[in-house]
Amino acid sequence: MSSLRTQLTRFIGVGVVSAGVDFALLALLMRLGLGYMQAKALSFVAGTTTAYLLNRRWTFTAAGSRKKFASVLLLYGLTFVLQVGLFSLLYPRLVEAGLGAPLASFVNGAQIVGFVIAQGTATAVNFVVQRRWIFADAA
Image (cartoon, rainbow, N blue to C red; front, side, top):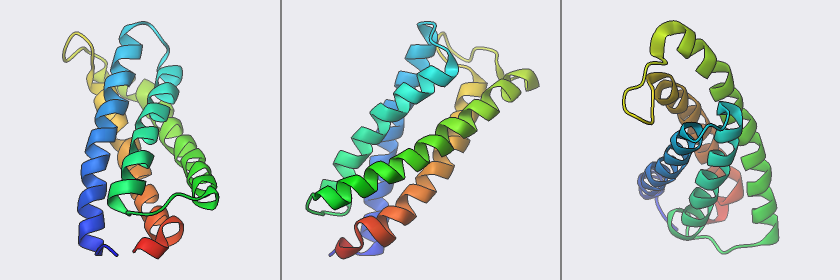
């Protein structure tokens, strides 16, 4: 049984790693010419797969089960819609607002701001649902 503080600290650490995977792949795929919605969908899958594997084993130290896996898939479906939807709504508006200029050869301000808002929202929902319902026996 891990304390809330331990779980939250580990969840944030895993989140940083997973968000890094997600954002790096998003920027790379967009740089390679993939549309922002398709790039975000693929990067989300890579980031959330990383998060699930690390959170189940390390953050919540929970044994795997079909029920938990199905619950996580349902949660990730929800956070997929939430995160990709928010990013897809925000990105073109942020570009229109002048944040589309490149900050580096592979990333622009609209990508960063849209990603942070969408990721932050989905992460908060994700932690609460995993801690309260999916991995509650490890809390």
